[in-house]
Image 1 (cartoon, rainbow, N blue to C red):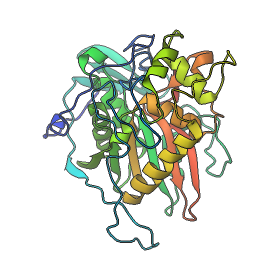
Image 2 (image 1 turned 120 degrees about the horizontal axis):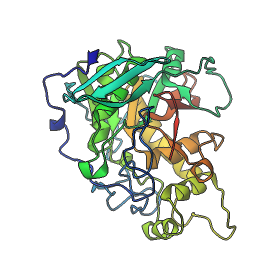
Image 3 (image 1 turned 90 degrees about the vertical axis):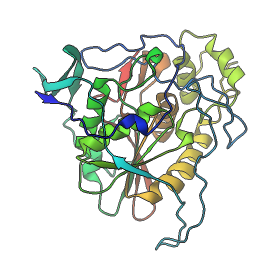
Image 4 (image 1 turned 180 degrees about the vertical axis):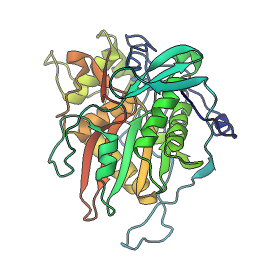
Length: 369
């Protein structure tokens, strides 16, 4: 059996911030079925009622107590690139990769392909390999299902740039601080193995600690001994949220707050007199703003390959936007929700064209609540 490696410098020195609370939507907070996947209820700490201000600004705090802002990195002009475009100045922290000893060991699963995870003598979950053997078509006009991250990474051309925007790995219950579990560390490490290469990757994360922990584990899985990373307040959550009072009003009328986000994102309502546009920004406008102003203008210029780790309440609508609502992930119909380490890959080709691919780091892109 393999034990999760431990390197000498403490992870927790990197961020003093810890998460402290989740939304109160229905569903178990930390259920670990045989697949090792947590159910989405109370899952992420990105409160769907957090306040948001006028277009382009996000005042107030998230449920994690993290101040929200329109951008934690202000693009400035330090010069021009070879293509004549400007590159924003970003401060990255470079440090040794260090993971805590969670008392976890892995062994091959008894069925299929993947690993069984046991932490402190108790079964934690299985991490199964992607069983979809269909080839990935990098030239497809659209994608209606999640694609394994290993396939997408392998299909990148040397002239491509890629930004993988993913949800963090499996986490503890909210009252325990919302940090990664031992299973979560190994999940993220397994994803790192799928995008292993000798090329440097820069990591971006929210100001909530479990996202940095996920970055650390992915980096270790890639075989890195150091990591270059930076926190970005725009990843904390609340990007799509406009009016906290309205959202709270909507949430009070449904069984789970995930139904509100789902109906708004897919623009599907049972009552024609109700839509959620007073509480949320327009999905297409706000989604394009995030991709253009954050991902393409700030993240992509820093590295050919980037990994961005955020939270489900932000990434769920972003993935719906990126797939033009063609991806079947309608919580209000079938309780499907964004899985851990799933999200969207932003592929920037040499000719400047951009492609969005829904991507999964585990064997499934969605989880059932």
